[in-house]
Image 1: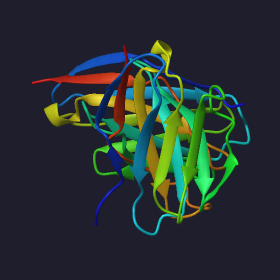
Image 2: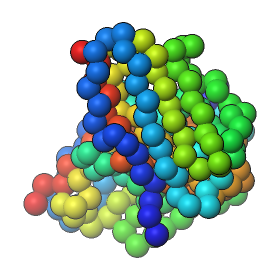
Image 3: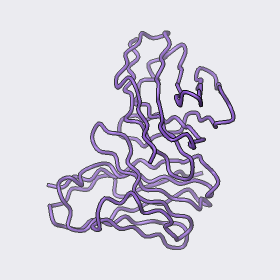
Length: 110
Length: 114
């Protein structure tokens, strides 16, 4: 089965700085890679996703990059704000099931 | 429109008791998923429904766990003879159809087995 590893487990940045979270996956057949943001007491919220036919995708302050050869993908958040503080999960899928990383707790320091 | 809803939001039960967790997916979504999130861990896939059928039950941890879906809408996850290691947040997600990858999550049910 698929194995997704995520790093770092915790990340603290100053407000306005950038944050980068990295994930690797094991199944070369995986072709869909979403990122979720989970705030305390809430379910994960889909914030951006990328498919394997694309190398990069941006949505305002958020971008995701995918390197299929190396089987890794990354989330980039620029100009971080305190409301970006949350736990972020990456996931990989080649069919219907999502396989999740173990999460990164991002803290943005005002 | 309304998102995925789950009930109860919190459930405390004694070891050995049975529990039922409910999920109401987004209206019109035919695919439904159950996940388990243990403290400080990622999300663990449990089961997937397409309509009322469950083509993938591979994530259910033991035969104490079962799930059903009726009318292509509401789903119930049942845990029989609960154990302390069942304590976790149980999350439900839905997506538009089998080919749609975007899954939308509910707020979860926090289960505590004492």
